[in-house]
Structure formats: structure tokens, C-alpha cells
Image (cartoon, rainbow, N blue to C red; front, side, top):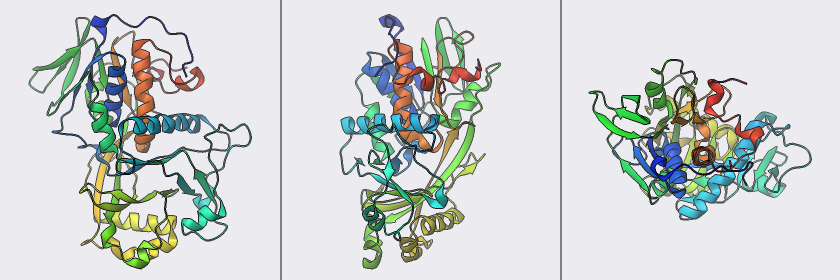
Length: 393
């Protein structure tokens, strides 16, 4: 689905990349480059998969809708399709992901569908039967996203990192980067070189800022966004609680997912997440379990009332992570400033939409570096370019 004529790919000697960050963004970049024949080394400070925000136990790939079908809606719809295709290729349906469809409870009437000329994968108004299946009262405003579903991010990350041509080095604490010869060198806090490559991709979410901010003139306004989900085991639900569970995920005021494996592997339920800006600490807090209880009570009132006791401190479990956002809610992807810093790229700023956008962003960055047709038309792709902050237009 390329939108421009490709120029010849870079010489083999130049098709080497060092990717910083082994989460959703970094693993997607690595996978997309490796599929194009690149040799990719991924470095992460963690000791294994899922240590950062990509360790979210379960989340949704679901589109954003707006009455004017604006940029975020069109980009997210393309991103969801890319993610679902990647999941179908790499993951096990039913345990790692599920194309279940997602019902969006239109809380407060915030969402409206665009009129006319919608693509074949467009969302629609939910039917009365779907509203009833969700346990919502008749007439509750809701949308149905058929091309949507749940994913366990850790499984997607692990699968992408296993692509031929990808080497992963764990426990690598990157402290600084510098231009060296015709490439980029990465160093630890003692100045020891961790790696060197013609192309360096920084894809370590909010930690990207610590590496890139020392560069004179770096202007990508990355911000932190902490989120916490609450979850529990299906086996702990009473019969009357089980009867109220919707057969598909429901979002619209946070998201509720059930029947998906917990980190321990047993089926669980999940609600969240919270949104706390300018917080860099991924701590699980009791007050956020209460916030998620209220979130469920708004999203699915009958279920929320029935499950209130599941949020008791002795029962509920939690997970928290720090995501990375940009002011206009669109990621920054590709070369940061090719004139001043050739070969230095970024893939970050996906906020709470990492599942929906990371695969598309990885494809866009890899296509750019390999001089392939881009996966989005120019009127959309230009709004994702990291270089928009170096050369505003």
C-alpha cells in the first residue's frame, strides 16, 4: 500500500541498525528492519521482555473515531489493521490475542461516527443485541468496532524480537550517544562503548528523553504518562458476577477485558487504566485501584456494582507503567534531524495507544530507512515524522 516510488535500498554494509529499547516500539522497528534484510541489534536496560510499559498484561487494539475522521482517527485505524495483521502472523489466537471486536460505551456522548464514504473496516453503531450482551440498558449509546480485539503486549514483543536477523542484548544501561565516524556510538555511564552502527534508533519510550535531550537543539517534547490497571482471576468471581461478564471487551471510559490469561497464565479480568501526567514512577497505588473500581462502575454499571468486592486490597492485583506522550497525541517517528544528525532516528510518543500504533510506526521507520514505499499516504505520514519538530511546517 505504498504511496511513492521507492529509490534503491541502501548498500548492504549500511543496512545495520542499533535499536535502543526492547518494548513495543523497539521490537516493532527491529522486526520491520530485519524483514528487509537488515542486521539489527536491540539493547535494553531490563533483564528480559516486558519490564517497562510493554509489560501491560492485556490491552486493546481498537480504532479512534471522530465526526470529521481527523488525523488521529485515520492513523489509528491504519495502525490497528497493521497490529492485527502482525498478531495473526506471529501470535496464537485465543491465548496471545483475540479478534473479538470491541464495544465502545459512548460515555457522555463523546464519540460520533463520520458520515458517508467510510472504509470497509469502519466502526458502526452498536446493535441493540450487542448493547444487551454488554449488560448495558437499552438505548445506551455505543459503537461497535469489528476490526478490533485484545492483545497481550509481552507476547507480541517477544515474537517480534525472535525474528531472524535480530539480536537482543539485555542489561545494557545506555547513558549517552555520540556521532562517531559514519555512524553512532552508544556508551554506558563509565564511557564504555556498548555498540556502534550506521543507524541508531531510540525507541525507549520516556527514557528516550534522557538520551536525546543533551543533543543541542533537540526539540521533541516527550512527556511521561503513568497508567495503572487493576486485575484479578476469573476463578475468584462468584456465579452472579460471571453472568454479567460481556462476551467481548468494552472500552469508552477505560477498558474492561475478561477471559484473557493473567501473567500467571490463568484466565483473568482487567480494568484500566488510570492516566497521570508528568509522573515518572511506575508504582502500584491503592488509590488507583479505587479509581479503576469507579471506572468500571461508569463503563459497565451493573458489573461494576457486582464486582465491587473484587477491588478489596486482599484480592485485587495491579500493574503500572510509564508511557510516553506528545502534545498532539501523535507519535514521533523516523529521522530526528537528518542534516545535523544523519542516521539518528526516533520511534516514541504513542501514549496509551502503543498496541494500536507501534507496528505501523515500525513499518514507517523501516520503510523510510530502506527507501521503500511508506505504509501511509503523504498527507498522513508527514504528521508522524519526528523531523516535524526540527523543521516545523
